[in-house]
Length: 510
Ligand code: FDA
Image (cartoon, rainbow, N blue to C red; front, side):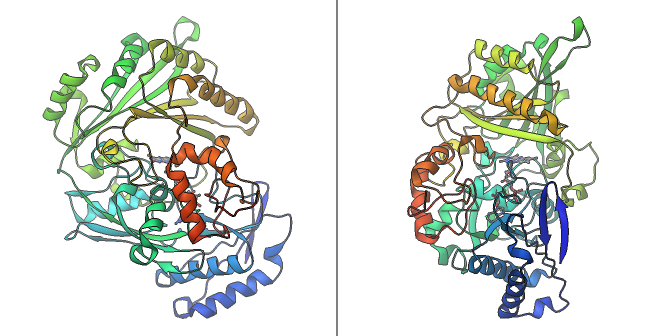
């Protein structure tokens, strides 16, 4: 056992380094875990406790995880499942009640079948590794998921998964065809044995509520050998306001192969006594060649003034590095670097959906609010919808953000010192309040993968009533929330899998 300190929480870490680990039976593993949990150290009241289980042997990985779930249930310990650890509110590794962390970082094998165009991916893998392993096998196959390579597939796929090809292929969850899951009864299920309801729930309804995903089977997607990229910056002097206004009228309607993403920031001008300048960066991917892209841009968005010199043709896997901001020529091996060490800054994120273009006045109001936060610390990402995202019905998966949405807004603010937390969080909340009149209503929708505890939380022990959870639940899942509650009630009536924003069963306590 190892004890280490994490901020102000004491964690007790238990590491298995059994030489015969792969030969231990399920009962042996259970007994070993049980002994540790009974030893007293792991039940200390008032301290935060985690069992940090490292699977040294991939063969026994599933068994280890199974044993950890099983023992936690017996000892009534809340579990936290950590895949890539990118949860915006840290729910995969912190809790206000004693808990066990099941860290899946060593459960990360990926097997690709280029003939059948499918892949089995263990839940501890990152999306960067998935991209790398696909590209290793084929130049004409790809997968659709997020931009940051260190995001884990465990959390990302359970919440949706939006990426630079989502207008063409939908979300990551839309492309899942099977899964292996440990349910609240300790059963290891696949799609057939879990049934279509539970399989539906884990593809967008969030991970923690329904079980622990061991692995996903996804369908791989056909892509051309070359795709085209551009990153074009514009400032207020170059008509940003008009450009953003026009962008809102075309972003969801352009060719499905085209995803025109928009990043907005502000910084101080070196002139005019340091006045703020708003910058827009149009970061774009086109699943096709440069000439077709120029033709589409000329037709739909000539105001941007895109020219051939702005565009770069490259392979899909190179585009992953391009969007992750690695310099050109960086080795693809960086995608295998999953070690997410502390980046050294604090962060708060929120999200919204826009269904009617924001007026010029509305945009100017955002620019004014940029003046009230530290330079370069805030960013708005406008991510277009439409295309395949809109062709799928709202109830096909729990991810309900389909037809009718022009784009999603991701608000973020970062800061370096803890003493500035209150100021920055207050700023982003003020911006969110301001945006209320321009975004979706009844419910004011939000993206589950951009988790935001400001939207509402369960009681401290994770149990909560349907009514209380509905407050945040319909924002993430709209009408799918009720079906998620029914599925939860059927598969986990005692609410074993829970956290601050897990789906409650109907019988849950208030
Ligand atoms: P983490 O391990 O923290 O898990 C997140 C949640 O899922 C937790 O509640 C956890 O318990 C649960 N969970 C994890 N593994 C599970 C498993 N195997 N079974 C059941 N439950 C499990 N999103 C997006 O759509 N597009 C993008 O481009 C990006 N980019 C991005 C960049 C950066 C820097 C961050 C921090 C986040 C993003 N995201 C994103 C958001 C991301 O999709 C979201 O945070 C995911 O939940 C992260 O999944 P991880 O496995 O990394 O997180």
